[in-house]
Amino acid sequence: MPWTHSATLPASAADTQRLYFLDWLRILAFGLLVAYHVGMYYVSWGWHVKSPAASDAIEPLMMLSSPWRMGLLFLISGAALMHAVAAQPQPLGAFFRRRSARLLWPLLFGMLVIVPPQSFFEVVGKFGYSGSYGEFLLDYLSGRDDFCRLEEERRRCLILPTWNHLWFLPYLWAYTGLFLLIRAWAPGLLARGSAAVVAASGSKWRLMLLGALPLMAARVFLVRFEVTHNLVWDWYSHAQYLSLFLLGAWMAGAGDALWLGLRRLRWLALAAALLSWALLMFYFNAYATQTPPEALRQLMRLLWGGMQWWVLVAVCGFARHALHRDSPLRRRLSAAVFCVYILHQTVIIVASQALKPWHLAPLPEGLLLIAITLMLCGWVYALARRLPAPLALLLGISPEARQAGSR
Image 1 (cartoon, rainbow, N blue to C red):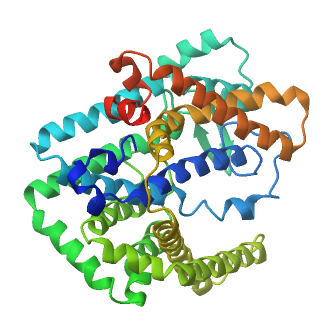
Image 2 (cartoon, rainbow, N blue to C red; image 1 turned 90 degrees about the horizontal axis):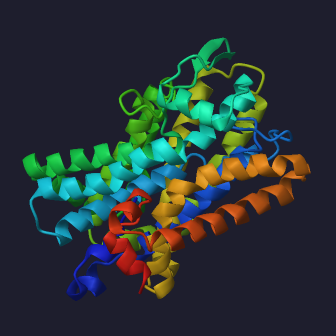
């Protein structure tokens, strides 16, 4: 998300409308994304490149964040958008054009410049590609379509060009457009949604079910749709992320009573989430080589959806309790985090391949990859802030972010 809602609000409204803890959560969520993508190098799950030491050893730890990490970003994005629209009275068309520039120019630049090294190392590792990077770049830009192999009895092909980790940007752009259409044509829907959230904030059990029910429904009815990160054919992902995005907007319109309610629920929600995770790990281990009873499968799907929401309740509650404050560090990190997001996966993949000949153990190598990624991304951000505004925008550094990062 290339903006913070707090940075767009008028100073006179700062004390009552700025939700600093959501900015901190956004920063922490993107930091977690760096660690998670480093972890993807070492697990048995499919990813662009794989460590020779990849195994299932850390997969239970990865599952602590996998079900909810992107959902948190969409929840925060919805809340941020609600605040930004309310704080900047202007035609919605003009607002959407500005948001489109902030999202789509970095996406286009990323697909043409940032992402290709990821795909190059992927075709070298998975398909035995022997050409140079320059030769691959021509294949990439021309949409070469024969990088295919058989996986789990299905033919899977690498679609080029691709947006890889930048899939968040077109999804956020589409959801932003949908939100603005609702605001223009059915504003009562937003008001009723916020009113329903306000009503739920008076009951801890309603809050515990508020976002859990749509996530449970998505898991039960749409999980058969494979996650594709294809904007027009990704029904399970849309059911999760769009519902959380709209819920975030409604929550932003519900006032601080809602966030205080989440703060009171933080320990209960954390306990529910950890218990759900433990039960799911036991279930996956018990039925790793056999088919579970259908009733148990559906029950675990419901539990998965509940866990996704209960973690979000817990992290929002703890953040409201401990991080509801401003600081120069928050402003600087908020300004930098979108640029780091754009760059981080390419840096991880390139650095992992550069470190491979050293044959490091997974733990020190993983920690080194995290350190290299944060340092290189921070260095590029510091340089990019000095570029002319149109060029800086390609790396997610808007004029507002440049101003906030200098304070």
